Image 1 (cartoon, rainbow, N blue to C red):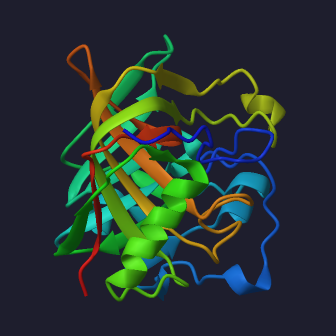
Image 2: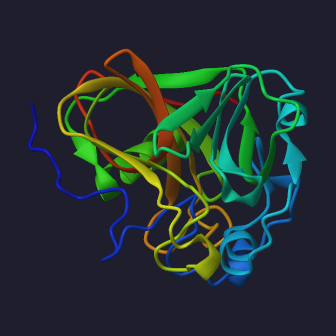
Length: 259
């Protein structure tokens, strides 16, 4: 086993909640993407970090039942009102919310008719290339691995594209937004803390994410080109949330779209 990198997906001094809207959100001219329009390979974007997280425009932009009207949909996003996280895996819709007692509630795989996303990055991928990860990787090294493999398979890595990881993960940190951001805080939501889960021991998991190097303040924050959600099972419970950090262990499989 190779030496494990200690770099996390979020490399700034604060935890950047990629889908809960914390941290810098200035939109660069290169990353202005049309809401609900194609933004690159197989990808659509509904909402943008700046308008949703900093400007408070958290209205519904796409119904989840409509988001999966095309087969083989994959997506990550946040619910209307920032009341939870949305994870779509091959058309299965999983919604994670924080209950009043602070526990996590996960619904799916069928979308609820009343659920809509205010922020959603979405792609349709019927076929995937895959490769085996040979050593422990995390953070910037993991981002580089995703980019290199996609580039080798003919994906335009200057534009957003979906990826998947299946296998053993360690040092997994997940959160589910609950209408609160510790940096861009609306006083009305300051006591609505995110749900968090930290697992240092190996767990079998799936990661659904998007590599988006030129989408700062739309799909990602400064300091990273990736946002992703993880699906893990702990003590028989399915836990799904945004990935704050993770180490991918040898033998895991990385998938990128097959053109």
